[in-house]
Image (cartoon, rainbow, N blue to C red; front, side, top):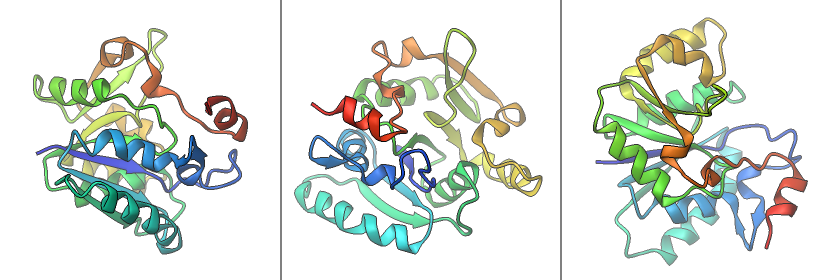
Length: 206
């Protein structure tokens, strides 16, 4: 079974509005991600900040489900137990809801995720026994939000949260991680493009 977690609970301060609902070529960014991922996995957990944000996503996701009735992929919207605690809590929330042993994690502001990247991540995860698989750039910078994490990470994440950490990168030195070059996972590297500001979205529109 293949699981995917999409993190949508950020405050989007640089964007000025909810990034996942920003329209790019007629569709909200969250729908761009769902269109790619739902064909390749068995379940998708969309992690949101609170019930208010969940309600705003509900209509778009329900419409998407209606338009894709042939798919068997289960799409579930969930909220963090405590809002505004950063992506590390979001990851913990997502992992606690999946039915498989681990999940590919994605941010909601990367609408150009490729099917090649998704398939390659799951393919490579099956070849190694690790708690995490994280893309890495030639300069050493990592992509901890475009990564795979095992449910074994949950107690370690909770420990990090207790110690005041909120970013996912703080988890990496506490788990067994395989670092994979971004070029192997996505030769075009478009899967790692983040749209953080209104001008980023404007420049990406057709």
